[in-house]
Length: 248
Image 1 (cartoon, helix red, strand yellow):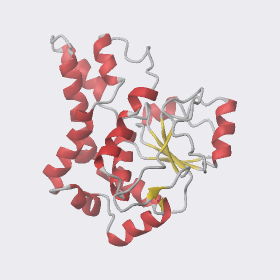
Image 2: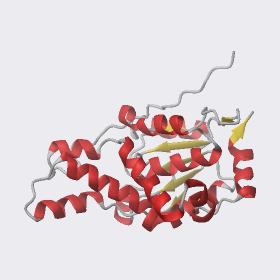
Image 3: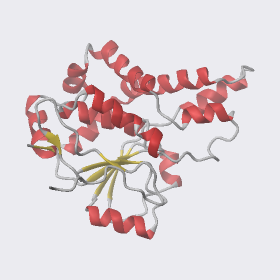
């Protein structure tokens, strides 16, 4: 029997590096393995990590980090073609603004600010996700999609990809929540925030992703309309994506 590839690749210099392959679609096909990966940023890859990525054939990276984030940790592999799709971070600044107003920060604040951030992916940044899908239609795989932590901007992008390819919602949710198993939270990140707040920021919750899809429903009517009108994926483009990234 064929051996199923590992979904998670345990890299030393990048956490949460995962393959989107292997998920079954509603019509009985399967997402191809070793074509689309997701990760946190690629700025701290070790020499051994680079060997793994070369063996995987990764040749393109789609980077959702903001301008300063990207400059602070550029991709460590010059042979990978990096495409910047900057979605500027807002969460930490919003929490600091609440604290500056004299309100003690709580986990409820953290959850609501995270949900606001996910809504902004739809309301203010759809053009960047549309650009990602335009690239997905081209011959750029194997590829990796990432931001800083590889969990929020990346998580939303990967959920959109799996939805567009016909993967059921339950499997998409399971893939999204795998971040809580594989992401290594940086204990030094935003140390001015309470630890319980930083724990929320270093995880994913179903409510975060739900907030983005609620914004889609509010602004576009439903997800299918968003895929067509927001992401620019009509019937022909969808068929092309399916031919490229599905098998069976």
